[in-house]
Amino acid sequence: MNSIKDIFKIEKKPRKGLLAVEWVVLGYMLLTTLIILFTYTKAINPESMLWGRFRILVIIAALWAVYRLVPCRFTLFCRIGVHLALLSWWYPDTYEINRVLPNLDPIFATWEQQLFGCQPALLFYEAVPSVFFSELMLMGYASYYPMIGVVALYYFFRRYQDFERITFIILASFFIYYVIFVALPVTGPQYYYHAAGLDNIVKGVFPDIGNYFATHQDKLPIPGSPNGFFHQLMEAAHETGERPTAAFPSSHVGVTIILALLAWRTCSKGLITLTVVGLILMNFATVYLRAHYVIDIFAGWVSALTIYAVLNFLARKFV
Image 1 (spheres, one colour):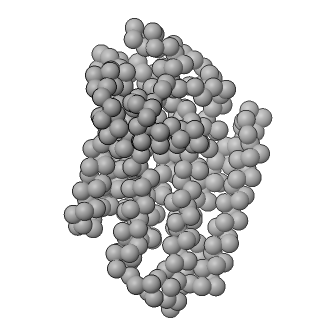
Image 2 (cartoon, helix red, strand yellow; image 1 turned 30 degrees about the vertical axis):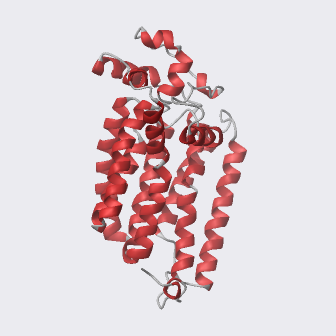
């Protein structure tokens, strides 16, 4: 483990330009800024989105300047860590952009029905309604961001030489998913079932709701006991950051797969066990909590393996 002295030791060859993760953020900002400007008259909050991007630019410039003044592992960690911390801030942004488009859930719910002959997200909770199981699923779902932090910190303290590469992979994978979510306005069962009406869903009828989610954010209740610890935690998270967006593919499953692959590279039994258990829970939790269709999970696996292969190649070559 790095000592405190190592973390604050001045680097002999400090990086002069921007880091790979910063280029990823700037690229996503440029792309979405162009989309915002193109849809400016239809967007709901274009000014606040543009102002938010300006603040991110200021943060990048300020942390770059601090690092140049004090080039050490700690200031480098701050440059990268702030963008990992802001990943949840960028998430609602996908909804602000894609709600100008018509909702696509009827298509995905129909595919789900054709593939399984039912809606697994509707039946899973009804089949296992116990409070213990609900809390277990909620715990698995809530482990998403903590797992990101654990993997990143492990590399920082134990395998610092790979820290910048693996954080590039994590951050870039998120923004790839965010680009997909901007283009595909799929909200998932918890929002679509509520908008379409459970009576219709039970009958296998999936009405087109058009631009319903441009002005509505209502959803089904979170499964489980309102008195449960993780239930209350999830309710609080939904109140602050959840939006009707980002269902296909499941980035929760996709990113957790990528975290498990990064953990596997460390040969740390503890880290591997943590991420594999988290991945198993995540696959079931996303459907149990009605956040995703099962086809979103399949797409999460395919997309994650593809994204990891491409980003791992780029990281080895350029980072």
